[in-house]
Image (cartoon, rainbow, N blue to C red; front, side, top):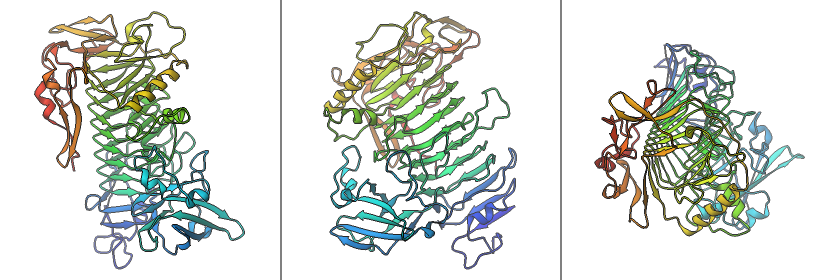
Length: 595
């Protein structure tokens, strides 16, 4: 059955095409397996709580009739601001106006930050912890938009009046003449009933939810699956969550060989401008497939701080596949922890996941800066082979591998690398920094992180970043990292057709370059046609200098890494280091959204 929704309908109907519902929730109250809910363009100021599961062969589909034109928002426009003095204005709202959830009386975390947010012309203002900082704001030098950090706000409760008062600094602007919104609703699409399965969301814009810090105790985002399985979220624009864009729920994760697991599929979405994470799965991410998404501007305001803020955060990550995404301009790209097993990070593009250009390192702020320093990929607690293959890792800090059992094959890495080693060598290697490890013993090479057929280009870092990374390495050398033992997989190199030989080392086939000494250029060109690599690497890279790599328990059952970034098959046993098998492919487009 088709169910129609149109916020602009002249009157509330019965869900038919001629007499559509006005609200998506009305459709969600009755939608059954196999139903198709078509939502017409318009702004829907509501939380949608689906009531029923679909099935694997008959999912319930919620779709925007026109791409990204059906907008579900957790924010409402507010007027009636009263001028206090200078650039400071005041708004007082009765608590009854918030209903059961007042995000200006709910803390995000253990700091002063509230779940609510104020938007001035679609830009989130900055909460502060005292009225004096509204009256006399100062710039946050870690934010990507330092000047806008002086647009501050502060809130407090007035118990005698049972109301919420908000003070805000709008600089020279009059908030009653501008488009000012407050977030009122906790989520945009979230089933209050746990365990609803097989729902499809397609083509929506969902924005501005007052969700709290996603964790093992709380699993809401703009979209949340709440222990469901088999969801598909595709072609959506998801933005401006106070904390997380998509939460994959809080559920006991089954083993990877459980044939009853239905993975979530997060594909072809744009996810941006969220405070904590773009996608998070805490105890509720059964082998998710996260593919071909554009994720950017996550945690770049630096108003929320944690060591695991990231575009994608999975804990645990068992059988997860993170494929063909473009992740840029975030504090951190991917964070995996809890238990990481049989997870693949393949054919992704990472760049500019770092601190802004303008920061300065001092003795007073360097520990805070280290806390805000992220990487393209950070992995903890790998219990089996986690593969990172055919990626472009181009941020200042490319990798932080705080666990063994990580396999890196055919990547282009233009940033610092920290890894957990099982030997006391390579401490001064300019291409790696070995993390401190207690009780080092000799063991098989694959009981470490392994680097095969990668292209390492040593980056000439900006001076402040070089200082900060050196201090971070100094701190890491003083803190022991837990040992984690990988499974029985080993690495093999191809000799001839059908023949493989065990590799008795954790590095082979890699190419090393220095962008300062060899004048190697690596940059990203992003335009309306997509994301391209602007590089002269072809002038320095030789083809077919490495051997095809395979990983498995035995040579006969090992899986070949014989497909390159573009999906082309690597022919024969001689291959080219890096993500592309042919040098001319470096001029090809790396990423473009498919809608």
